Image 1 (cartoon, rainbow, N blue to C red):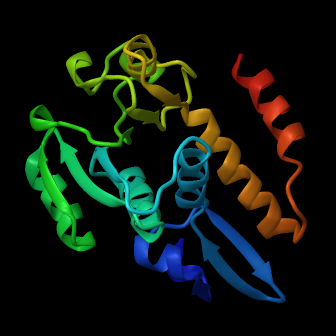
Image 2 (image 1 turned 180 degrees about the vertical axis):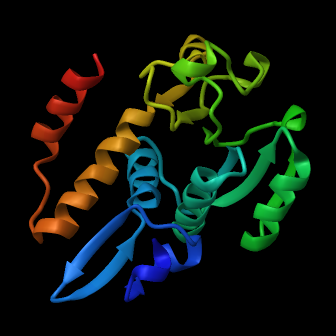
Length: 197
């Protein structure tokens, strides 16, 4: 869809992906609200500036999340089942990369892989031995809302952020882009919870 647009907002241009198109007086502008949603969801539970996050995955979602969090001042480490894919994404961002089996998260870990989605069974992309109190664990998967990764993280005493929070915040950003008004966060949160239950 990008070639059909008149312009991209700066973040969408850097990410190279668009999920929202706004008609601004006849000018079609592409935005990426997934990136926005991830940063807002994570910022609800921790300060982002100067903190370290490990991102699991190297696809489009990981790219959006990584760009957004780097923009917020986080230090990043990208891991993937295929280390070469992690290295390609990391090189484009100027951050470090490694293999999934070498994960040792500092402040936060964000799952941007499909592991844990309903269609793929109750798998977790991270060994439970990596989970501990003081760690923030975010899973962008929102169906199920409580993935195996989040359940194991909670059991280990980590702070958890579900993919539903990212979904909520990206939808709020879309609402604001489309209407020019502040999103009704509480009403949207209630509606989302009802739909995901």
